[in-house]
Image (tube, rainbow, N blue to C red):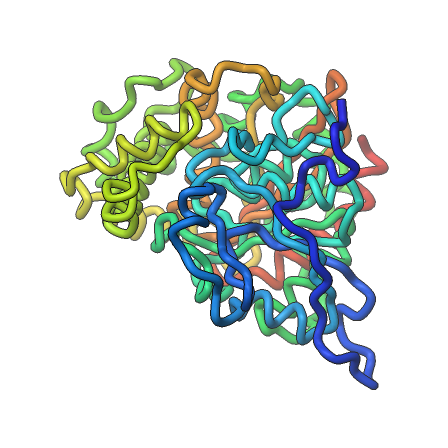
Length: 426
């Protein structure tokens, strides 16, 4: 049941735009919302938690990513609800409420960029900004049935954005329309318009799709038929991603038997280890940046979030060097696999979003399978887009495409080319 006209998406509303230009700007006439992790001059950046907001002053400047959008002619309509300290993919916030998923009101919207995704899915804005460290754009995009883009690591400025885990943090964005998704990318990435390039290969990660609870005729077959129609059957390739990662990322041996207590049996061990390495380094980086504030203030955190944050505060530096080796080896392996214009296809998430009333204590187990998929782009720093594929059992489903680091313009163009054919093939 929708309780508020804004679906509970907004922390606060306002209308922010720069002086109207006499010239047509790239984003003129478009509206957007911003996750409450971005600095906007004159507003407190709340980080999803009232104790954080209470202990911090209003921002004295605006994040460059937000300024780029304003300068390009877009109008910001407010700041959106997020999971506390960006430390969950669930989309639940005990202080400010869980934004209502417009596509499935009984399901969580996904997080931590929950309000930003909901604002777009509910057509309250044309697009929105989020952040994606572990999955915080890709998961809510999938759960809310919209497009979500995680750019290459470092491609968009994170200045003026509160860090969660700085060596993984990215500024991502949501849209309903692939053309708008692409236009946002041109602005944020500071790229000129370029002609689309035909992909050299689109590799189906077969073992990743086997993790999915969704029948393959609703995901893989829709993608394959669309690729064959647009680019020819020779473009479709297949791979067992877990085997490639096992062979090409030897540093993962240090994580094969560590930190996998919640591992689900059918997850390829190398991908489970990849997820463990990513989460270990993210906890360590979170601790280094936020432990002082957390221990001093002892904030009121919601269930599930509290345990996760305090576990991070207790994290040690054990195996951190191997985490960095894993990332270097993975990036090299995937770069060799994909080449300049290759794409890896995998499920964004392997199943449907959980019900709103699900026990948060089970979320780590619930997300162990998604993390094994999401850590591929997260750990490599590659760009990834989540594309909606309609509904299955009355909830949204999605597929993801991953391209090598720096191939953001290529991937955004590909989505725009592929999108209508995918929707027609569903």
